[in-house]
Every structure is written in structure tokens, then in C-alpha cells.
Image 1: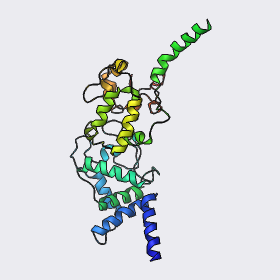
Image 2: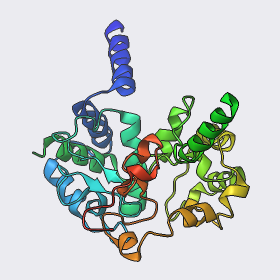
Image 3: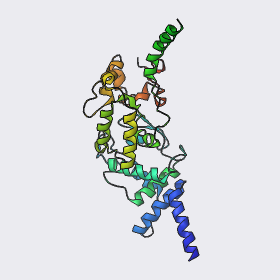
Length: 134
Length: 153
């Protein structure tokens, strides 16, 4: 019982204070595994999602519209022209460090570019790609 | 005499002040987090209070993007913008939906900018202050700090 309590506390603290891309990926992977037994994040699927052309939005048909063809590069907002820092952790250590921020931008960008909310599996794959791409 | 000199100095300083619009020290963190990701943290003085109210009321379709924030954050940002808003008489009408770039002040200040400059991909949009006002993120729009992207004049 005590172990269970400690474990729940640990889980709560991870959810609230996750600080690394690995922890954030794990949060999404656990959610995905609950829906789909045996789920394991794939950087390759994440890359496919990153490059997919959804073409729902004239100005932002794909992630690459603002983030360029390489997540290691700095990008430019397709409408306002504002500089966008690289998405890849290898090029920008601040990425995928704040779970609330990550969730906010998946929320906004998936709706705008993909046309729907992204699934936990897609988010886990995407974070995996951004953490691993060199 | 001393007083006159002081007034003259003040007169000299005023035009410079008008181009210096740093964010107040008590700017809520939410303003930067919510409003300065997709575009510059525009100085609140660039729009009148009623135009900020309309902007904040229309975040659901904010120039084509859903930029809604939660109610508490929205109130905090709206109060900040209205508290520090610009003088409507000096700015002129911002149109509907309100655009900083439609105010008479913005248009007057940018009348020398060529069509070629506006359409350059490095500028992309009149919303992209930093393309030329390199220190805009610090609230500085002074003429001395303007550097057009290379090859433009």
C-alpha cells in the first residue's frame, strides 16, 4: 500500500514537473498504450507526421510551412514572418521541457494544420523524432 | 534661463520617447507567453483601448487563427493592454478588425517604405516589425536602429 502511494506520488510529480523530452514522450506513450496495447513511440512515424502535407490551411499546409524541412533549422512564421527557433532538441535545448507548453502547441497547431486534435500516439512519435533527430 | 534650457532639452527628448516603447516592468508573463509566440510582443501603446478590447473579444478568429486563451488569462492580458493603451487621437482609426498597421500613425510613419520592401520574403508581413526594427523586441523603434534586409532600400 505504501509502495502504491509512493508510486502515485512519483507519477503525479512526473506529470507536474516533467522536464525532459524523455519524460514528456513517456507521458504521451503511456496515454497511447492505454488506448493501444503494446504501443511504442517511433521517431520514424514522427518524421512522417512532420513532413505530411495536410493542405487544409493555405498558408500552413504542413508543419514544415513554419518549421522548414529540417527541424534542426530556425524557421519563420508563415503569416507574421516572426523567427521560430528550431524544434529539434539537438538544436534547441529549450524544446519539450515544459509539458503544459508542449500540450498547448500540439493543441493549437494540430487544430490549425492537421485539422483535428493529434492523438497521444502521434504526439509520442513526434516528440521521439524531435528528441532523436541529429 | 535654466528653465528654458530644460524645456528645450525636453522638447528634443520627446520625439525619441515616442519611438521608445519598452514593455512596462509589471507586464504579466501571460502577455509574452500568449501574444509573443507568433508575433512580436507589440507595445500596447500602438492601439487604443477600445481596439484592444475588440481584439481580445475576437481571439477565436485572430487574423485566421484561433488564439483563444482561458478566461483568467484573457482578463489579465486585456487589463494590461487597456491600462497601457495608446492615445486614440494620435493613433487614428485602426479599422475592423483593428490592425496596428491600419492606424494613421503607422501609415504615416511607414510612407517611405517601398512596395518591394513590403513584399520581400524576409519581411513577409507588416506584422514583422523585427525585419527592419532590429531592436523592436526591446520596444525600440527609433530611426537610427532601422536596418533593412540586405539589398533593400
